Length: 302
Length: 302
Image 1 (cartoon, each protein chain N blue to C red):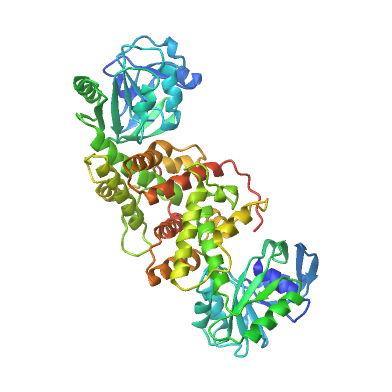
Image 2: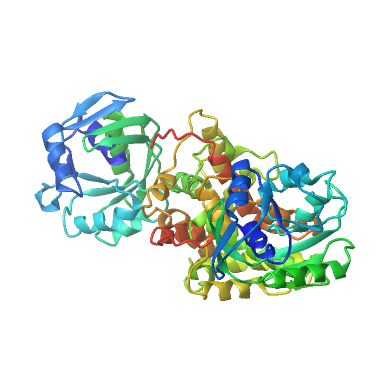
Protein backbone atom coordinates (compact mmCIF):
# COMPACT_ATOMS: atom_id res chain seq x y z
CA UNK A 1 0.00 0.00 0.00
CA UNK A 2 2.82 2.43 0.98
CA UNK A 3 4.85 1.01 -1.91
CA UNK A 4 2.02 1.72 -4.36
CA UNK A 5 1.82 5.33 -3.16
CA UNK A 6 5.55 5.83 -3.77
CA UNK A 7 5.54 4.02 -7.11
CA UNK A 8 2.56 5.86 -8.59
CA UNK A 9 3.77 9.29 -7.50
CA UNK A 10 7.40 8.71 -8.49
CA UNK A 11 6.28 7.51 -11.93
CA UNK A 12 5.43 11.14 -12.68
CA UNK A 13 9.06 12.25 -12.30
CA UNK A 14 11.15 9.12 -12.88
CA UNK A 15 11.19 5.72 -14.55
CA UNK A 16 9.68 3.30 -12.04
CA UNK A 17 9.87 -0.48 -11.91
CA UNK A 18 7.76 -2.33 -9.35
CA UNK A 19 9.08 -5.66 -8.08
CA UNK A 20 6.01 -7.62 -7.01
CA UNK A 21 5.67 -10.89 -5.14
CA UNK A 22 2.90 -12.26 -7.38
CA UNK A 23 3.19 -12.42 -11.20
CA UNK A 24 -0.53 -11.53 -11.71
CA UNK A 25 0.13 -8.34 -9.78
CA UNK A 26 2.98 -7.43 -12.12
CA UNK A 27 0.89 -8.23 -15.21
CA UNK A 28 -1.99 -6.10 -13.95
CA UNK A 29 0.34 -3.14 -13.28
CA UNK A 30 1.92 -3.42 -16.74
CA UNK A 31 -1.52 -3.57 -18.36
CA UNK A 32 -3.43 -0.98 -16.35
CA UNK A 33 -0.90 1.25 -14.64
CA UNK A 34 -1.43 2.30 -11.05
CA UNK A 35 -4.36 4.46 -10.03
CA UNK A 36 -4.31 6.83 -7.04
CA UNK A 37 -7.51 8.22 -5.55
CA UNK A 38 -8.24 10.15 -2.36
CA UNK A 39 -5.77 12.98 -1.65
CA UNK A 40 -4.61 12.79 -5.26
CA UNK A 41 -6.31 11.56 -8.39
CA UNK A 42 -4.26 10.24 -11.32
CA UNK A 43 -2.97 7.09 -12.97
CA UNK A 44 0.76 6.42 -13.12
CA UNK A 45 2.49 4.33 -15.72
CA UNK A 46 4.96 1.84 -14.23
CA UNK A 47 6.88 -1.23 -15.38
CA UNK A 48 6.45 -4.30 -13.19
CA UNK A 49 7.79 -7.83 -12.75
CA UNK A 50 8.08 -10.53 -10.13
CA UNK A 51 11.57 -11.43 -11.42
CA UNK A 52 14.42 -9.28 -10.02
CA UNK A 53 16.64 -10.29 -12.97
CA UNK A 54 14.21 -8.60 -15.36
CA UNK A 55 14.82 -5.16 -13.83
CA UNK A 56 17.50 -2.95 -15.44
CA UNK A 57 20.05 -1.14 -13.27
CA UNK A 58 18.53 1.67 -11.17
CA UNK A 59 19.59 4.42 -8.77
CA UNK A 60 17.22 3.97 -5.86
CA UNK A 61 15.07 1.13 -4.53
CA UNK A 62 12.43 1.83 -1.90
CA UNK A 63 11.84 -1.45 -0.08
CA UNK A 64 8.29 -0.94 1.11
CA UNK A 65 7.25 -4.46 2.10
CA UNK A 66 5.82 -5.14 5.52
CA UNK A 67 8.45 -6.03 8.09
CA UNK A 68 7.36 -9.66 7.94
CA UNK A 69 8.30 -9.85 4.22
CA UNK A 70 11.53 -7.86 4.41
CA UNK A 71 13.90 -10.81 4.65
CA UNK A 72 12.48 -12.27 1.42
CA UNK A 73 12.63 -8.90 -0.37
CA UNK A 74 16.25 -8.30 0.67
CA UNK A 75 17.13 -11.80 -0.50
CA UNK A 76 15.72 -10.94 -3.94
CA UNK A 77 18.11 -7.96 -4.13
CA UNK A 78 21.17 -9.91 -2.99
CA UNK A 79 24.07 -9.91 -5.47
CA UNK A 80 22.29 -7.40 -7.76
CA UNK A 81 22.10 -3.64 -8.41
CA UNK A 82 25.56 -2.79 -7.07
CA UNK A 83 25.14 0.94 -7.86
CA UNK A 84 21.76 1.36 -6.17
CA UNK A 85 20.85 3.07 -2.91
CA UNK A 86 18.31 1.14 -0.85
CA UNK A 87 15.66 2.91 1.23
CA UNK A 88 13.89 1.11 4.10
CA UNK A 89 10.54 2.43 5.33
CA UNK A 90 9.43 -0.44 7.60
CA UNK A 91 7.88 0.16 10.99
CA UNK A 92 10.05 -0.36 14.03
CA UNK A 93 13.81 -0.73 14.21
CA UNK A 94 16.25 -3.00 12.48
CA UNK A 95 15.09 -3.02 8.85
CA UNK A 96 18.41 -1.51 7.72
CA UNK A 97 20.34 -4.29 9.45
CA UNK A 98 18.29 -6.93 7.62
CA UNK A 99 19.00 -5.26 4.26
CA UNK A 100 22.70 -4.83 5.12
CA UNK A 101 23.00 -8.56 5.80
CA UNK A 102 22.21 -9.10 2.09
CA UNK A 103 24.56 -6.55 0.47
CA UNK A 104 26.68 -3.42 0.92
CA UNK A 105 24.52 -0.88 -0.92
CA UNK A 106 24.32 2.59 0.66
CA UNK A 107 21.18 2.53 2.78
CA UNK A 108 18.81 5.39 3.58
CA UNK A 109 16.62 5.02 6.67
CA UNK A 110 13.04 6.09 6.28
CA UNK A 111 9.97 6.42 8.42
CA UNK A 112 6.70 7.35 6.86
CA UNK A 113 3.51 8.72 8.33
CA UNK A 114 1.53 8.42 5.08
CA UNK A 115 -1.35 6.03 5.00
CA UNK A 116 -3.63 4.64 2.37
CA UNK A 117 -6.05 1.88 1.55
CA UNK A 118 -5.25 -0.73 -1.06
CA UNK A 119 -8.39 -1.30 -3.13
CA UNK A 120 -6.91 -3.79 -5.58
CA UNK A 121 -3.67 -4.61 -7.42
CA UNK A 122 -3.77 -1.39 -9.45
CA UNK A 123 -5.71 1.05 -7.24
CA UNK A 124 -4.59 2.66 -3.99
CA UNK A 125 -6.39 5.38 -2.05
CA UNK A 126 -4.12 8.06 -0.58
CA UNK A 127 -5.59 8.77 2.90
CA UNK A 128 -3.13 10.61 5.14
CA UNK A 129 -0.80 12.91 3.20
CA UNK A 130 1.77 13.18 5.97
CA UNK A 131 5.55 13.20 5.58
CA UNK A 132 8.20 10.62 4.88
CA UNK A 133 11.34 11.30 6.88
CA UNK A 134 14.71 10.17 5.61
CA UNK A 135 18.18 9.96 7.12
CA UNK A 136 21.56 8.40 6.34
CA UNK A 137 22.26 4.91 7.67
CA UNK A 138 25.80 4.13 8.80
CA UNK A 139 27.75 6.64 6.73
CA UNK A 140 25.51 7.07 3.69
CA UNK A 141 26.17 10.49 2.19
CA UNK A 142 23.67 13.13 3.41
CA UNK A 143 23.54 14.64 -0.12
CA UNK A 144 22.02 11.36 -1.30
CA UNK A 145 19.35 11.67 1.39
CA UNK A 146 18.56 15.26 0.44
CA UNK A 147 18.33 14.42 -3.28
CA UNK A 148 15.97 11.60 -2.48
CA UNK A 149 13.74 13.81 -0.31
CA UNK A 150 13.65 16.39 -3.11
CA UNK A 151 12.70 13.73 -5.65
CA UNK A 152 9.84 12.48 -3.47
CA UNK A 153 8.63 16.09 -3.03
CA UNK A 154 8.70 16.66 -6.80
CA UNK A 155 6.61 13.51 -7.17
CA UNK A 156 3.86 15.17 -5.11
CA UNK A 157 4.47 13.52 -1.73
CA UNK A 158 5.83 15.11 1.42
CA UNK A 159 9.38 14.34 2.54
CA UNK A 160 12.10 15.68 4.83
CA UNK A 161 15.79 14.86 5.12
CA UNK A 162 17.36 14.61 8.59
CA UNK A 163 21.10 14.34 9.27
CA UNK A 164 20.18 11.91 12.07
CA UNK A 165 16.91 10.04 11.73
CA UNK A 166 17.11 8.22 15.04
CA UNK A 167 15.17 10.81 17.06
CA UNK A 168 12.27 10.49 14.61
CA UNK A 169 12.65 6.72 14.27
CA UNK A 170 12.55 6.27 18.02
CA UNK A 171 9.56 8.60 18.47
CA UNK A 172 7.67 6.52 15.97
CA UNK A 173 9.00 3.25 17.41
CA UNK A 174 7.70 4.07 20.89
CA UNK A 175 4.41 5.33 19.48
CA UNK A 176 3.96 2.27 17.26
CA UNK A 177 5.05 -0.31 19.83
CA UNK A 178 2.38 1.06 22.15
CA UNK A 179 -0.49 1.84 19.82
CA UNK A 180 -0.18 -1.21 17.58
CA UNK A 181 0.06 -3.76 20.39
CA UNK A 182 -2.71 -2.19 22.48
CA UNK A 183 -5.00 -1.97 19.44
CA UNK A 184 -4.26 -5.56 18.43
CA UNK A 185 -5.02 -6.85 21.94
CA UNK A 186 -8.14 -4.78 22.63
CA UNK A 187 -9.69 -4.67 19.15
CA UNK A 188 -9.94 -0.87 19.42
CA UNK A 189 -8.82 1.39 16.57
CA UNK A 190 -6.57 4.25 17.67
CA UNK A 191 -9.31 6.37 19.20
CA UNK A 192 -10.04 8.50 22.26
CA UNK A 193 -9.71 5.48 24.61
CA UNK A 194 -5.93 5.69 24.09
CA UNK A 195 -5.75 9.16 25.65
CA UNK A 196 -8.38 8.71 28.41
CA UNK A 197 -6.93 9.02 31.92
CA UNK A 198 -9.94 9.82 34.09
CA UNK A 199 -11.22 6.60 35.65
CA UNK A 200 -8.72 4.15 37.17
CA UNK A 201 -9.71 1.59 34.57
CA UNK A 202 -9.03 3.96 31.64
CA UNK A 203 -6.75 2.68 28.91
CA UNK A 204 -4.80 5.96 28.70
CA UNK A 205 -3.01 5.12 31.96
CA UNK A 206 -1.59 1.98 30.37
CA UNK A 207 -0.74 3.80 27.13
CA UNK A 208 1.02 6.52 29.11
CA UNK A 209 3.02 4.00 31.14
CA UNK A 210 4.07 2.22 27.92
CA UNK A 211 5.19 5.52 26.39
CA UNK A 212 7.17 6.28 29.56
CA UNK A 213 8.91 2.90 29.43
CA UNK A 214 9.86 3.58 25.81
CA UNK A 215 11.17 7.05 26.64
CA UNK A 216 13.41 5.61 29.37
CA UNK A 217 14.94 3.24 26.84
CA UNK A 218 15.56 6.07 24.34
CA UNK A 219 17.16 8.17 27.07
CA UNK A 220 19.42 5.32 28.15
CA UNK A 221 20.34 4.70 24.49
CA UNK A 222 21.36 8.35 24.16
CA UNK A 223 18.62 9.18 21.65
CA UNK A 224 16.80 12.49 22.12
CA UNK A 225 13.27 12.13 20.78
CA UNK A 226 12.03 14.21 17.86
CA UNK A 227 8.49 14.29 19.25
CA UNK A 228 7.00 13.14 22.51
CA UNK A 229 5.12 9.92 21.69
CA UNK A 230 2.43 10.58 24.31
CA UNK A 231 1.73 13.96 22.68
CA UNK A 232 1.69 12.29 19.24
CA UNK A 233 -0.90 9.90 20.70
CA UNK A 234 -3.10 12.64 22.18
CA UNK A 235 -2.98 14.67 18.95
CA UNK A 236 -3.72 11.66 16.74
CA UNK A 237 -6.73 10.60 18.81
CA UNK A 238 -8.17 14.11 18.49
CA UNK A 239 -7.96 13.96 14.70
CA UNK A 240 -11.52 12.72 14.37
CA UNK A 241 -11.67 9.53 12.36
CA UNK A 242 -9.99 6.72 14.27
CA UNK A 243 -6.99 5.16 12.57
CA UNK A 244 -6.92 1.35 12.23
CA UNK A 245 -3.38 0.28 13.20
CA UNK A 246 -1.90 -2.33 10.89
CA UNK A 247 -1.26 -4.80 13.72
CA UNK A 248 -4.97 -4.80 14.53
CA UNK A 249 -5.74 -5.56 10.89
CA UNK A 250 -3.12 -8.31 10.98
CA UNK A 251 -4.54 -10.10 14.02
CA UNK A 252 -8.10 -9.79 12.75
CA UNK A 253 -6.99 -11.42 9.48
CA UNK A 254 -4.93 -13.93 11.53
CA UNK A 255 -1.74 -12.86 9.72
CA UNK A 256 1.78 -12.71 11.22
CA UNK A 257 2.33 -9.25 12.73
CA UNK A 258 5.33 -6.90 12.70
CA UNK A 259 5.75 -7.44 16.47
CA UNK A 260 9.42 -8.51 16.17
CA UNK A 261 10.52 -5.33 14.35
CA UNK A 262 8.43 -3.09 16.60
CA UNK A 263 7.91 -4.21 20.22
CA UNK A 264 10.49 -6.99 19.89
CA UNK A 265 13.11 -4.44 18.78
CA UNK A 266 12.21 -2.11 21.66
CA UNK A 267 12.40 -4.92 24.23
CA UNK A 268 15.80 -6.04 22.92
CA UNK A 269 17.15 -2.45 22.93
CA UNK A 270 15.86 -2.11 26.50
CA UNK A 271 17.71 -5.22 27.55
CA UNK A 272 20.83 -3.98 25.75
CA UNK A 273 20.84 -0.69 27.69
CA UNK A 274 19.68 -2.32 30.94
CA UNK A 275 16.30 -0.59 31.30
CA UNK A 276 13.38 -2.74 32.53
CA UNK A 277 10.29 -2.59 30.29
CA UNK A 278 7.87 -5.01 32.00
CA UNK A 279 4.77 -3.67 30.23
CA UNK A 280 6.20 -3.79 26.70
CA UNK A 281 7.59 -7.24 27.50
CA UNK A 282 4.10 -8.35 28.59
CA UNK A 283 2.55 -7.02 25.38
CA UNK A 284 5.31 -8.64 23.31
CA UNK A 285 4.54 -12.05 24.83
CA UNK A 286 0.78 -11.56 24.50
CA UNK A 287 1.03 -10.75 20.78
CA UNK A 288 3.43 -13.64 20.15
CA UNK A 289 0.91 -15.92 21.89
CA UNK A 290 -1.91 -14.42 19.84
CA UNK A 291 0.00 -15.32 16.67
CA UNK A 292 0.33 -18.87 18.04
CA UNK A 293 -3.44 -18.96 18.63
CA UNK A 294 -4.01 -18.82 14.84
CA UNK A 295 -2.80 -22.42 14.73
CA UNK A 296 -5.07 -23.68 17.52
CA UNK A 297 -8.13 -25.65 16.63
CA UNK A 298 -11.11 -24.78 18.74
CA UNK A 299 -12.23 -27.63 20.97
CA UNK A 300 -14.28 -26.20 23.79
CA UNK A 301 -15.31 -27.72 27.04
CA UNK A 302 -17.03 -24.90 28.91
CA UNK B 1 -24.21 -24.21 33.23
CA UNK B 2 -22.81 -24.64 36.78
CA UNK B 3 -26.33 -23.91 38.08
CA UNK B 4 -27.79 -26.66 35.90
CA UNK B 5 -25.23 -29.16 37.23
CA UNK B 6 -26.20 -28.33 40.83
CA UNK B 7 -29.94 -28.29 40.13
CA UNK B 8 -30.05 -31.60 38.29
CA UNK B 9 -27.89 -33.45 40.82
CA UNK B 10 -29.62 -31.95 43.87
CA UNK B 11 -33.02 -32.89 42.44
CA UNK B 12 -32.12 -36.50 43.27
CA UNK B 13 -31.92 -35.78 47.02
CA UNK B 14 -34.03 -32.64 47.55
CA UNK B 15 -36.90 -30.60 46.15
CA UNK B 16 -35.36 -28.16 43.68
CA UNK B 17 -36.77 -24.98 42.22
CA UNK B 18 -34.87 -23.22 39.45
CA UNK B 19 -35.25 -19.44 39.17
CA UNK B 20 -34.56 -18.62 35.53
CA UNK B 21 -34.11 -15.33 33.76
CA UNK B 22 -36.22 -16.29 30.73
CA UNK B 23 -39.77 -17.67 31.03
CA UNK B 24 -39.29 -20.10 28.09
CA UNK B 25 -36.36 -21.60 29.98
CA UNK B 26 -38.58 -22.19 33.03
CA UNK B 27 -41.36 -23.71 30.89
CA UNK B 28 -38.88 -26.05 29.17
CA UNK B 29 -37.50 -27.23 32.53
CA UNK B 30 -41.01 -27.84 33.92
CA UNK B 31 -41.98 -29.79 30.82
CA UNK B 32 -38.80 -31.80 30.16
CA UNK B 33 -36.78 -31.85 33.35
CA UNK B 34 -33.03 -31.38 33.23
CA UNK B 35 -30.78 -33.88 31.50
CA UNK B 36 -27.15 -34.48 32.47
CA UNK B 37 -24.72 -36.27 30.15
CA UNK B 38 -20.96 -36.75 30.24
CA UNK B 39 -19.58 -37.73 33.66
CA UNK B 40 -23.12 -38.66 34.73
CA UNK B 41 -26.16 -39.70 32.74
CA UNK B 42 -29.65 -39.06 34.10
CA UNK B 43 -32.61 -36.68 33.95
CA UNK B 44 -33.60 -34.72 37.04
CA UNK B 45 -37.07 -33.46 37.76
CA UNK B 46 -37.14 -29.80 38.87
CA UNK B 47 -39.70 -27.04 39.31
CA UNK B 48 -38.88 -23.79 37.52
CA UNK B 49 -40.11 -20.23 37.21
CA UNK B 50 -38.86 -16.80 36.23
CA UNK B 51 -40.94 -15.22 39.02
CA UNK B 52 -39.28 -15.20 42.46
CA UNK B 53 -42.71 -14.74 44.11
CA UNK B 54 -43.81 -18.12 42.72
CA UNK B 55 -41.16 -20.02 44.70
CA UNK B 56 -42.18 -21.42 48.14
CA UNK B 57 -39.89 -20.94 51.15
CA UNK B 58 -36.65 -22.93 50.95
CA UNK B 59 -33.57 -23.71 53.02
CA UNK B 60 -30.74 -23.04 50.59
CA UNK B 61 -30.32 -21.03 47.39
CA UNK B 62 -27.24 -21.54 45.26
CA UNK B 63 -26.80 -18.33 43.24
CA UNK B 64 -24.94 -19.66 40.24
CA UNK B 65 -25.28 -16.80 37.77
CA UNK B 66 -22.23 -15.35 36.09
CA UNK B 67 -20.70 -12.48 38.02
CA UNK B 68 -22.11 -10.05 35.48
CA UNK B 69 -25.70 -11.12 36.32
CA UNK B 70 -25.25 -11.34 40.10
CA UNK B 71 -26.58 -7.90 40.94
CA UNK B 72 -29.85 -8.67 39.12
CA UNK B 73 -30.13 -12.10 40.76
CA UNK B 74 -29.56 -10.70 44.26
CA UNK B 75 -32.14 -8.00 43.58
CA UNK B 76 -34.68 -10.75 42.76
CA UNK B 77 -34.05 -12.29 46.21
CA UNK B 78 -34.30 -8.98 48.10
CA UNK B 79 -37.01 -8.89 50.78
CA UNK B 80 -37.77 -12.59 50.32
CA UNK B 81 -36.84 -16.00 51.77
CA UNK B 82 -35.85 -14.73 55.24
CA UNK B 83 -35.01 -18.27 56.47
CA UNK B 84 -32.79 -19.24 53.57
CA UNK B 85 -29.04 -19.60 53.40
CA UNK B 86 -27.51 -18.17 50.22
CA UNK B 87 -24.50 -19.78 48.53
CA UNK B 88 -22.35 -17.80 46.10
CA UNK B 89 -20.16 -19.68 43.60
CA UNK B 90 -19.07 -16.83 41.31
CA UNK B 91 -15.52 -16.50 40.09
CA UNK B 92 -13.33 -13.91 41.74
CA UNK B 93 -13.93 -12.02 44.97
CA UNK B 94 -16.80 -9.94 46.24
CA UNK B 95 -19.89 -11.93 45.26
CA UNK B 96 -20.85 -12.30 48.94
CA UNK B 97 -20.69 -8.53 49.41
CA UNK B 98 -23.07 -7.99 46.50
CA UNK B 99 -25.55 -10.50 47.94
CA UNK B 100 -25.19 -9.01 51.43
CA UNK B 101 -26.13 -5.58 50.07
CA UNK B 102 -29.55 -7.03 49.23
CA UNK B 103 -30.38 -8.85 52.48
CA UNK B 104 -29.08 -10.35 55.75
CA UNK B 105 -29.37 -14.05 54.94
CA UNK B 106 -26.57 -16.28 56.22
CA UNK B 107 -24.15 -16.58 53.30
CA UNK B 108 -21.90 -19.50 52.40
CA UNK B 109 -18.91 -18.76 50.17
CA UNK B 110 -18.27 -21.24 47.43
CA UNK B 111 -15.69 -21.82 44.73
CA UNK B 112 -16.20 -24.56 42.24
CA UNK B 113 -13.80 -26.30 39.93
CA UNK B 114 -16.54 -28.23 38.10
CA UNK B 115 -17.09 -27.50 34.47
CA UNK B 116 -19.65 -28.41 31.88
CA UNK B 117 -21.08 -27.49 28.54
CA UNK B 118 -24.60 -26.19 28.21
CA UNK B 119 -26.19 -27.88 25.19
CA UNK B 120 -29.62 -26.30 25.51
CA UNK B 121 -32.12 -25.12 28.13
CA UNK B 122 -32.67 -28.64 29.48
CA UNK B 123 -29.39 -30.46 28.73
CA UNK B 124 -26.00 -29.91 30.33
CA UNK B 125 -22.88 -32.01 29.83
CA UNK B 126 -20.85 -32.64 33.00
CA UNK B 127 -17.20 -32.29 31.88
CA UNK B 128 -14.84 -31.85 34.84
CA UNK B 129 -16.08 -33.62 37.97
CA UNK B 130 -13.87 -31.63 40.33
CA UNK B 131 -14.83 -30.30 43.76
CA UNK B 132 -16.93 -27.44 45.04
CA UNK B 133 -15.35 -25.87 48.12
CA UNK B 134 -17.51 -24.15 50.71
CA UNK B 135 -16.79 -21.94 53.70
CA UNK B 136 -18.66 -19.66 56.10
CA UNK B 137 -18.95 -15.97 55.17
CA UNK B 138 -18.82 -13.43 57.99
CA UNK B 139 -19.99 -15.60 60.89
CA UNK B 140 -22.21 -18.13 59.16
CA UNK B 141 -22.30 -21.30 61.27
CA UNK B 142 -19.75 -23.91 60.12
CA UNK B 143 -22.32 -26.70 60.75
CA UNK B 144 -24.45 -25.15 57.99
CA UNK B 145 -21.47 -25.31 55.64
CA UNK B 146 -20.77 -28.95 56.52
CA UNK B 147 -24.42 -29.96 56.05
CA UNK B 148 -24.44 -28.28 52.68
CA UNK B 149 -21.24 -30.03 51.57
CA UNK B 150 -22.72 -33.37 52.67
CA UNK B 151 -25.92 -32.67 50.73
CA UNK B 152 -23.97 -31.88 47.55
CA UNK B 153 -21.96 -35.08 48.00
CA UNK B 154 -25.16 -37.15 48.44
CA UNK B 155 -26.40 -35.59 45.19
CA UNK B 156 -23.44 -37.14 43.37
CA UNK B 157 -21.12 -34.13 43.09
CA UNK B 158 -17.86 -33.52 44.93
CA UNK B 159 -17.74 -30.98 47.78
CA UNK B 160 -15.58 -30.00 50.74
CA UNK B 161 -16.25 -27.73 53.71
CA UNK B 162 -13.47 -25.42 54.90
CA UNK B 163 -13.57 -23.42 58.17
CA UNK B 164 -11.86 -20.62 56.20
CA UNK B 165 -12.38 -20.56 52.46
CA UNK B 166 -10.16 -17.58 51.77
CA UNK B 167 -6.98 -19.60 51.08
CA UNK B 168 -8.86 -21.56 48.40
CA UNK B 169 -10.73 -18.50 47.13
CA UNK B 170 -7.50 -16.55 46.74
CA UNK B 171 -5.69 -19.43 45.04
CA UNK B 172 -8.47 -19.60 42.51
CA UNK B 173 -8.68 -15.80 42.25
CA UNK B 174 -5.01 -15.49 41.33
CA UNK B 175 -5.25 -18.43 38.95
CA UNK B 176 -8.41 -17.08 37.30
CA UNK B 177 -7.28 -13.46 37.09
CA UNK B 178 -4.21 -14.64 35.21
CA UNK B 179 -5.55 -17.43 33.02
CA UNK B 180 -8.84 -15.79 32.05
CA UNK B 181 -7.36 -12.42 31.10
CA UNK B 182 -4.40 -13.90 29.21
CA UNK B 183 -6.68 -16.31 27.33
CA UNK B 184 -9.15 -13.54 26.49
CA UNK B 185 -6.36 -11.29 25.14
CA UNK B 186 -4.42 -13.92 23.20
CA UNK B 187 -7.26 -16.11 21.93
CA UNK B 188 -5.46 -19.17 23.35
CA UNK B 189 -7.32 -21.77 25.40
CA UNK B 190 -5.55 -22.73 28.63
CA UNK B 191 -2.88 -24.88 27.03
CA UNK B 192 0.85 -25.59 27.20
CA UNK B 193 1.71 -22.00 26.14
CA UNK B 194 0.73 -20.89 29.65
CA UNK B 195 3.48 -22.96 31.25
CA UNK B 196 6.22 -22.47 28.62
CA UNK B 197 9.28 -20.63 29.95
CA UNK B 198 12.05 -21.54 27.53
CA UNK B 199 12.38 -18.78 24.93
CA UNK B 200 12.38 -15.14 26.10
CA UNK B 201 9.16 -14.58 24.18
CA UNK B 202 7.36 -17.48 25.89
CA UNK B 203 4.01 -16.72 27.48
CA UNK B 204 4.80 -18.68 30.66
CA UNK B 205 7.14 -15.88 31.81
CA UNK B 206 4.21 -13.46 31.80
CA UNK B 207 1.87 -15.98 33.44
CA UNK B 208 4.46 -16.64 36.13
CA UNK B 209 4.96 -12.92 36.79
CA UNK B 210 1.17 -12.44 37.06
CA UNK B 211 0.93 -15.33 39.54
CA UNK B 212 3.77 -13.79 41.57
CA UNK B 213 2.04 -10.40 41.69
CA UNK B 214 -1.12 -12.13 42.94
CA UNK B 215 0.80 -14.07 45.59
CA UNK B 216 2.35 -10.83 46.90
CA UNK B 217 -1.13 -9.38 47.34
CA UNK B 218 -2.37 -12.49 49.18
CA UNK B 219 0.67 -12.39 51.47
CA UNK B 220 0.15 -8.70 52.24
CA UNK B 221 -3.56 -9.40 52.91
CA UNK B 222 -2.55 -12.11 55.40
CA UNK B 223 -4.05 -14.94 53.37
CA UNK B 224 -2.04 -18.16 53.15
CA UNK B 225 -2.82 -19.84 49.84
CA UNK B 226 -4.41 -23.28 49.71
CA UNK B 227 -2.55 -24.16 46.50
CA UNK B 228 0.17 -22.44 44.56
CA UNK B 229 -1.55 -20.93 41.50
CA UNK B 230 1.52 -21.42 39.28
CA UNK B 231 1.51 -25.13 40.15
CA UNK B 232 -2.25 -25.26 39.49
CA UNK B 233 -1.47 -23.75 36.08
CA UNK B 234 1.30 -26.21 35.25
CA UNK B 235 -0.82 -29.19 36.31
CA UNK B 236 -3.89 -28.01 34.42
CA UNK B 237 -1.97 -27.44 31.18
CA UNK B 238 -0.61 -31.00 31.40
CA UNK B 239 -4.11 -32.44 31.65
CA UNK B 240 -4.33 -32.99 27.90
CA UNK B 241 -7.40 -31.32 26.45
CA UNK B 242 -7.07 -27.55 26.72
CA UNK B 243 -9.73 -25.81 28.79
CA UNK B 244 -11.56 -22.85 27.23
CA UNK B 245 -11.69 -20.16 29.93
CA UNK B 246 -15.06 -18.44 30.21
CA UNK B 247 -13.59 -14.97 29.65
CA UNK B 248 -12.24 -16.10 26.28
CA UNK B 249 -15.72 -17.36 25.35
CA UNK B 250 -17.16 -14.04 26.54
CA UNK B 251 -14.89 -11.86 24.41
CA UNK B 252 -15.35 -14.08 21.35
CA UNK B 253 -19.13 -13.72 21.75
CA UNK B 254 -18.61 -9.98 22.47
CA UNK B 255 -20.33 -10.33 25.87
CA UNK B 256 -19.47 -8.43 29.05
CA UNK B 257 -16.82 -10.35 31.00
CA UNK B 258 -16.40 -11.06 34.71
CA UNK B 259 -13.27 -8.85 34.75
CA UNK B 260 -14.56 -6.63 37.60
CA UNK B 261 -15.11 -9.55 40.01
CA UNK B 262 -11.85 -11.24 39.04
CA UNK B 263 -8.94 -9.00 37.99
CA UNK B 264 -10.76 -5.85 39.13
CA UNK B 265 -11.18 -7.35 42.62
CA UNK B 266 -7.51 -8.36 42.73
CA UNK B 267 -6.34 -4.91 41.61
CA UNK B 268 -8.51 -3.19 44.24
CA UNK B 269 -7.29 -5.56 47.00
CA UNK B 270 -3.72 -4.82 45.88
CA UNK B 271 -4.30 -1.11 46.20
CA UNK B 272 -5.94 -1.65 49.61
CA UNK B 273 -2.87 -3.47 50.97
CA UNK B 274 -0.41 -1.21 49.12
CA UNK B 275 1.15 -3.82 46.81
CA UNK B 276 1.88 -2.72 43.21
CA UNK B 277 0.41 -5.04 40.55
CA UNK B 278 1.37 -3.32 37.28
CA UNK B 279 0.82 -6.39 35.11
CA UNK B 280 -2.64 -7.24 36.46
CA UNK B 281 -3.53 -3.55 36.21
CA UNK B 282 -2.43 -3.57 32.55
CA UNK B 283 -4.54 -6.66 31.81
CA UNK B 284 -7.51 -5.13 33.65
CA UNK B 285 -7.37 -2.02 31.46
CA UNK B 286 -6.87 -4.05 28.28
CA UNK B 287 -9.94 -6.21 28.97
CA UNK B 288 -12.05 -3.17 29.90
CA UNK B 289 -10.98 -1.58 26.60
CA UNK B 290 -11.77 -4.82 24.76
CA UNK B 291 -15.31 -4.68 26.19
CA UNK B 292 -15.55 -1.09 24.92
CA UNK B 293 -14.44 -2.26 21.47
CA UNK B 294 -17.72 -4.23 21.11
CA UNK B 295 -19.44 -0.88 20.66
CA UNK B 296 -17.06 0.44 18.00
CA UNK B 297 -18.18 0.40 14.42
CA UNK B 298 -15.44 -0.56 12.02
CA UNK B 299 -14.39 2.25 9.72
CA UNK B 300 -10.93 1.47 8.43
CA UNK B 301 -8.42 3.67 6.74
CA UNK B 302 -5.37 1.45 6.37
